[in-house]
Image 1 (cartoon, rainbow, N blue to C red):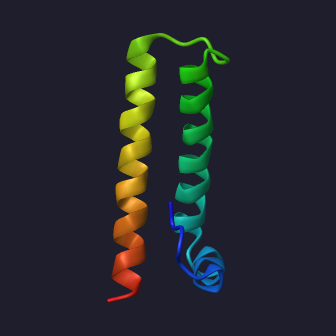
Image 2: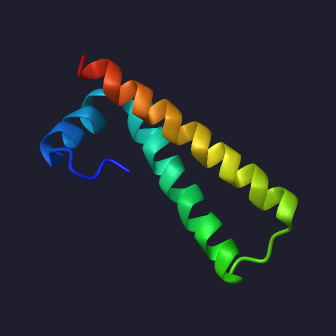
Length: 72
């Protein structure tokens, strides 16, 4: 998600902001579950999958906002 950003910046953000760290890990977990569901490894219904995708997108949007606010 933050490809191309210096790892040192992300590491500092993880250390300084527990909310960012928690949300980032939550997004990563959702990303894995969505991928597993799409591959058929995780059997879930379409409604749950759609909900997970919306939650993942909301987490990404919030992370992006948090990152941008710290760099402007």
